[in-house]
Each structure stands twice: as structure tokens, then as C-alpha cells.
Image (cartoon, rainbow, N blue to C red; front, side, top):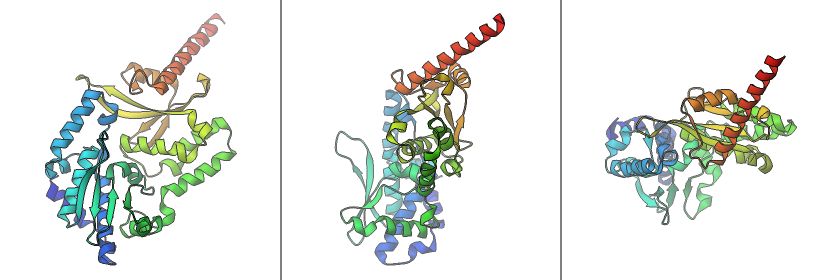
Length: 329
């Protein structure tokens, strides 16, 4: 897809409601529509965080080069904060909206955007940080007016999101469904909580084909939204991947498990892009996947990775002991 084709595709889907209201409202809604639509067309490149340092550096360096050409940005599925910021700027500029790329205070490398409306109001926007919210239809956190917050409060932002077709009404946010799950787990025993959350339709429904990067951040956010502090401390979420022949990380996924202090009670969950959810597996299955090349944790210093490997080893020893007892009988 070329830059021209991407912009044409975005323009063809603009709802009529975007063009209703004052000039300032129409401009804000158009910028918001592009923000959401562009996010749904792309995904964050996992290699930046989960690959080795050299690979991450190479990906970022390439994204800086790509950012000079809208055609290169439009043609790629996986982007970084650098390429997201530049692509959003280029698309909005083509649609007549002033948008600039800004960098956080050094030594941060993160890039985002500032939109300057014709009225003079400025909107800070960060497509990359809002990706998982957009993919899961949650409330947005990084599209906001600078200074005069009350102009674009949550109520008004919700009305604009309804106008652009992001949600049908205020109750349509996934946040509401997550809150219902949080309320219900209070009646469960401690060991039942994680399986219940991982298996709840409210948590994973409609998330088929969501990429690993966005799913990872979504489930990470769930720890704060669903579990109390004590429970959250016992739940680990670790990246998993294979290493290709060239030494580069690939086939990314992630694992969630609770540190139950007893290997017999540990249930690991692996993310499936195809299913769009966390699927339970046994420690024995995880051992086989590990033997076939699946890395558990993004380094040998990964605390969660070490704990999981410990439980895998304990399960293996327990199986051998049971087999020995059966033979002796």
C-alpha cells in the first residue's frame, strides 16, 4: 500500500458525523478519526523491546529512515513510536490539519504528536501508546487537549468517539465489561480467580487476530484493573519467542501464570493470535515448547521466566517419581 492509497482508504471511511458541528469540532473529530483508524491498520514492532539490544537498535534506526518516506511507512504493518508519529503527521498534514512530531525530554527517545487546531488549541496525541486501547475498544488515554482539559473531557471525547463509530454508546467501552468481571471475582476462592478472568468472554471477546504487542499491553493493564495489589504481585506476565537461524527473535507471544508456590497448582496461559485470547496449557506442554526453542522470558535474568522454569522442573521430577512408584507397585 502506498501513502496515497492509505490516505484514500482513510478518507473513504470518514463518517458523515465528522463533518457536523463547529469548525473546531469537525477538525478535532477528523484528527481523532485518523488517530483511531491508523492505529487499527498497524501494530507495534515487538523487536524493539523483546529482541536483543542490537536488533532493537537496528529496528529503530530503520524506522528513522522509513519516516522520511510516507510510502515506506504506509507499506509496513509493524511500526515504532518514531514511524507512528511521522505517519500520523504526514496523513493529517495531507488532510489539511497541522500536526508536528515532538520528542519527550532527553534521554527519552519516544516520539509523539502535537496537533494545532485552526482555533489555536493544541492536542497531544500518541498513537503508539493508545494502540492497545484502540484494538480492545477501551477508553483512550493519550488523545487530549493541552492546558484546557475541560474542553475535551471524557464526556465530550466519548461523544466524538460515538460520532466516528469507535463505540455505539458510553456502555460500549470494554472498561465497563472489565469492571463487571472485577466485581464478580470477589465471590471466588483465591485459586479460582485467574482461571475465571482468563476464561471470561468480557475479557477476550472480539479480540481475534489482535497482534501480540497490543495484547501484551492489554493484559498487563488488566492486572491493575481487575486484581487487588496482593493478587497482582503473584501474577507474572513474561514475553516468549523463538530465535531464528540468523539469531534474531521471532514468533513472539507471552505467558501468564500465578506463582502458586506449588507446581501442582500452577496453570500457565499462552496468548494465541488466532484465538485472540489466553489459552491454558500444562507445565509439561510448556516444557516441550521450551525444548523445541520457545524462550521463556526475554533474558536469563527474567524473574518470571526463572520461576516458571523452576515449576516446569518440579513437575518433571514429580512425574518421574510417580512413574517410579507405579513401577514398584
